[in-house]
Image (cartoon, rainbow, N blue to C red):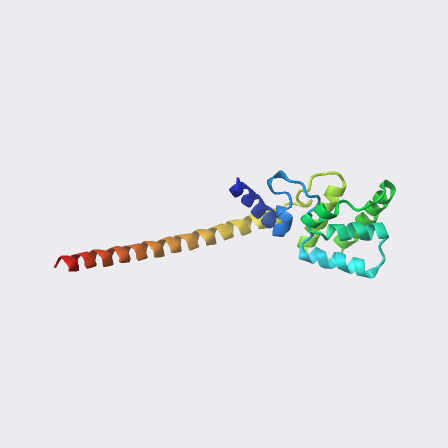
Length: 179
């Protein structure tokens, strides 16, 4: 079971550019709300909060988003009315749309797409795209697998040589003791 979870975490990190915290946010089927943002997005969100141009409800929601899943669980949901919630959704959508038009780091763009999908009531899945990111991720995974395989073969060869040397030394010691 843990191997499957670890594989899902790795796939999330490689295919979607997610941080380990983001990839782990739904481990073993638990739902903790939106995943924590990657460091690139944290910086962007903190800058937005510092500018002071957000409504109070939107600022509260972004502060909530910056919390870890554990902190969110402890704090509970932000106290926002249904009417405010719609306004917050519109404000965050407008901000995120504007950010996506700018040149922002890929992990931040991926996070925005995931959160927008979640706000639209969909699952937290991969960002929309033409598959180029997935193809690059698959290539990166293949290359990493090849490097890991080569390293494992080298380690196995070294261990085999060490075992042969130890066996030869033991054999020589036994023969020396028999003389």
